[in-house]
Amino acid sequence: MRKVLVLLCLGGVTAFAQIGATPQYDAGPKLNWTFGVHRSQPTFSATAAGTKDGRASLVDTEADLGLGRSGSPSGAFLEYSGQAHGFRLAYDALRFEGERTLARDIQLDGVTYSAGTGIRSKARLTVVEGLYTYKFLRQADAWVGLDLGAQVLKSELSALTLSGPPTSSALSPTMVLPQVGLSGWSSGAGGLLESRVFYRYFRLQGASCSRYGMDARAYLYPRFGLRAFYEAGTVKAPAGSTQGDLDLRADSRLTGLGLVLRF
Image 1: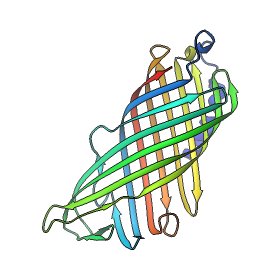
Image 2: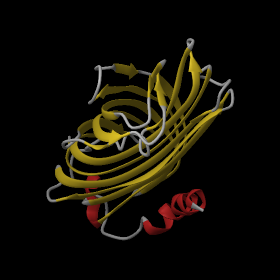
Image 3: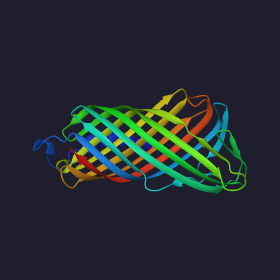
Image 4: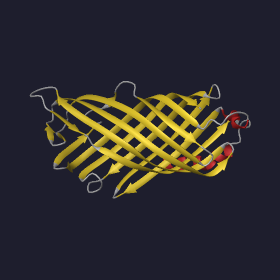
């Protein structure tokens, strides 16, 4: 159902694009570049079951470790939007912490933690994305495009026992997720309001990833504005696919507010 709603939004971008006055670009210099910074509120959950490089893992970051957001994660992006082509570079650094008494035996990269053990865990997730967009449907204040790119997820999950002999371990998978999908953009109020939606999906060797989201911007001045966004993603890498004999599943949500500058 979510995929259908996103695609319907993409199809309706052009219809809603006529709201507002004539675009600002007719009266002044073209502002093709946008730089933005933001604070976000992420949620993340993952399960790992199986072995990789001979080391076994069996853990659920939410049910077993109670991982939750730590601090106020930040990020930034730089994008270019030309008449037919667009580019985007984005960076996010996310932090999570949790503390639980284990209700079952778990394993983390070959280290076993017994039920009843108090454990403190930390996770760091660094996300770097590069994206190219070809705009195959274009109007003065709207377009629909094909997205091609990659997202690199570098993660580190560490755990430390709180009772008994101190034991610690870490799991540090890095994944490169291709980005293939559609995006749509529209502008109104003379270019002072912008919105964008996207949906991406890719499958390779039994592993799959999907993402969708929306981005809304309101400019107080032609060059400076505010941004609100929402993204959601799912990664599934069954045993025997890209992570060896490790079955890895992850779900993420990211909402945030930020500042944007056009130039």
